[in-house]
Amino acid sequence: MLQEQEAHAAQMEQTFIAIKPDGVQRGLISEIVSRFERKGFKLVAIKVVVPSKEFAQKHYHDLKERPFFNGLCDFLSSGPVIAMVWEGEGVIKYGRKLIGATDPQKSEPGTIRGDLAVVVGRNIIHGSDGPETAKDEINLWFKPEDLHQFRYLIKSGMS
Ligand code: UDP
Ligand code: MG
Image (cartoon, rainbow, N blue to C red; front, side):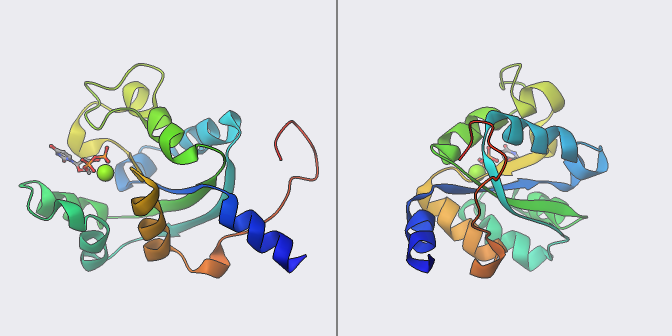
């Protein structure tokens, strides 16, 4: 059983998704969670966290040379964030599709940022941009035992 679970965990793709403080303050938690859930992805970890500024700087370390870095880290650490791990085939790339382009002015209607956000500095959601960042971000925000392995008992086409 344990071996089966480990094999399952090794092969299942996972991504890190966070609802940023603006998404939480605007009451968009359920709207955002439901878009991933209805698509058929599986929520395997979720928590409310107020990151410190140092933690925000770690999360966004790739962007430390950018002029908006300081304001971005101040903002991420300004209030509760919903940190999540979503699992499923193709979830990293498709998660980015559900989210939409970084600048909400360029996000297509039908995407989370396209439908729900207006400016790049308040684009309500974060999603890992590739397999390496997904792994790093999941490890930064969660402990391995926070990630649950389970099967849905009531079948609706999802495993
Ligand atoms: N950002 C910003 N100004 C910019 C570009 C990005 O404030 O000109 C913020 C924005 O909130 C974005 C975050 O920095 O979501 C991280 O930037 P990245 O390029 O990684 O975009 P993402 O992966 O979030 O689409
Ligand atoms: Mg990014």
